[in-house]
Figure 1 (tube, rainbow, N blue to C red):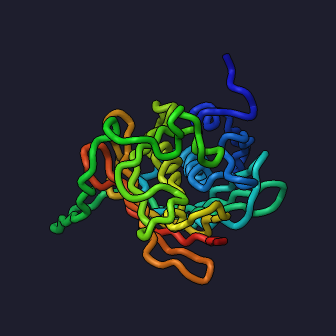
Figure 2: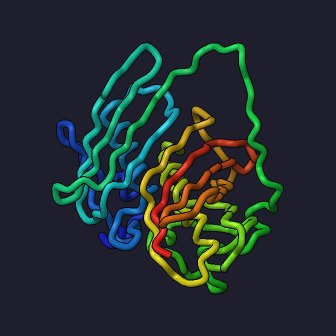
Amino acid sequence: MSESSSHQSLPALLASMKASDDVSSVSIPDNWLQGRAVYGGLSAALCLQATLDMFDDLPPLRSAQLSFIGPGGGDVELRPRVLRRGKSTAFIDVDMSAAGEPTARALFCFGAPRESGLAHLQLPAPDVADATDCGPFFEDSQGRNRGPNFASNFNSRSAAGALPMSGAESPDFTVWMQHKQADINPVIIGLVALADALPPAAMACFDKPAPVSSITWHFDMLMPEPATTDHWWLCRSQAESIGEGYASQAMTIWNADRQPVMVGRQNVAVFY
């Protein structure tokens, strides 16, 4: 049975992308929207997929910078462009637009591994229970999605910290996340699509609904080929500064073996 045009899993959505010359196009179904806009994690994943489709000999992704410029759903176009390619690294930017208006811009850095005499990694995972022992985050007690539209694509388990709009003193979410349609290749596309799924951590301090909107997002990959067990990723978002209608937050993702996979920062507009 085919999926409806208003609801598609990530694999089905990626399979529907069409490339012509230097442009990729795809239609965004309702279940990947956040309000009027394409969910930010999906925007990043589509930009990355369009890049990998156009340039199939790239080294591993090392870093990404995303700017979310304006809302836009429906039919979108993506235009990857090589800015520079050297011996070990490649810089590629991608413009995403809808109805001729810019919606997002991505800048990716891909880098081949190099020999090094240095090795240091100190990002211990929080001491939390496994996903199967944690309660729901986006879902209510009946398993129904109580988050934005795009959240219906994920299973989520609250591991530590607060829940959205709980009036918490500490703006901190720690949540196990998993795609409901788990077999996504390459894994990094599914990970990027999931990595921005948590609400802005400032929402832990809300005591009533209010709009939020991601402005920029930067992340670094700590594994050239990220992998996890049972498709679960442990995601943490912590707002370190909230004021004048903006929040700045740190974001970290570990795999099920508690190995750090991705670190990032995000600036968010807060209308509270």
